[in-house]
Length: 260
Length: 263
Image (cartoon, each protein chain N blue to C red):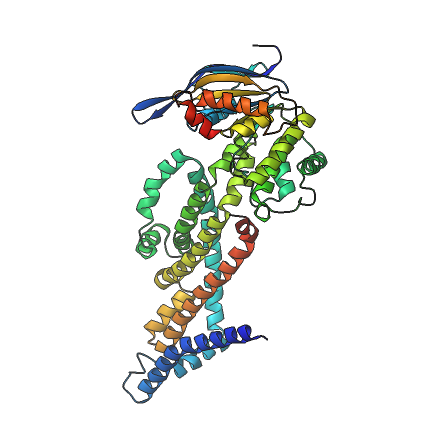
């Protein structure tokens, strides 16, 4: 484990019992995430990437191996780490401001909570919508609220479970840019699970490619392109091809050309 | 008023008149039948007689007196049932083991008509207020209990997952996530519970009381005051209907912001 690792995953295994059968979901994966890094995990559906995030937040048990956050083994949810889910998961009866203050630590004073909410509502570009109910917001705006809610707890490690997957292309690209800005501004470590390869390359310092059945790390690809990145740059496309090759190892070259 | 609005009003008036034609015709035939002797007025008094009787019962205070006592019993029994039903229902919805512990007993007791329990309750508690109120509690309890349990169980699991990740305390999860999620169901249960309480109070008073509207119905029957009896039964029906309507409006008012927030 490197000293600078905020997250260390060590020989992590996960089995699911389905009826009589045991299905191996993750087969002993190991990786470190350094402080301040933006890491993406890509892989086809069923490779266990969402399960991995659930284990980091202690929503799922670990079958074998260990997870360390800031050097401490995960035994339950910790204040150092929080998650943004695929769906906004807002409380429909609370307005935007109250949705954000609702999940803040009870140790924080009421006044401080309000100020935090205001700050992060501004940060995600929702100033003026403090009193709106979730049902009055678009899907993209709802996801912005859930991002503000996560950031307001000032986590050192932020897990993102395909948070832009359900949004339209325009909103998605918009939110990717904002996430990047927030990452640079907040200095939080981000671990993104996605099946969108462009998204992974656009955002990440490193991409971990998971293969399925059982999930294991296929490749750990460093992305050292300067930001802001252009999705049409030659280097961008080269990395894209590299990730594709890792993901579709068994396919013929022609198939990959088709995807690119 | 524009064209569509006036047409809408015309349709409403037409529908209202249509709905009134059959009852009006029946009342007319009923009145005629009693007047010309083809219906026995001692068994089925004419509508005009019922109206006179109603006015008489209002004027001499008998109706108000009976209703006041019945209402007091309903409120008492309903409140007890609400507390028991909501607390047990909440626990049954939250904890699977508690649910299993109680559900067999609940499922056996629930289908028994309250009327069938009245003799047993009177044997145990004797004739009196404790027996009357107990009968009402049982009559109101089941819908409150079952709807509370169902409402609690219908809480979005994804919100509870979020609460876990964000380390919200258990009381906060129960009172600020589960309770608002279950609110509409609980209010439905309470509304059905009040209706149950109202039906039970009449049954209880008919069998084991010396006051209240149910007692007045039995008393009228024993004195062969057919008109009194009919009027009282109609009043029971109309009050039951009004209680349900008023509570439905209340339910939608209270839960308005919670329900409108749902997708």
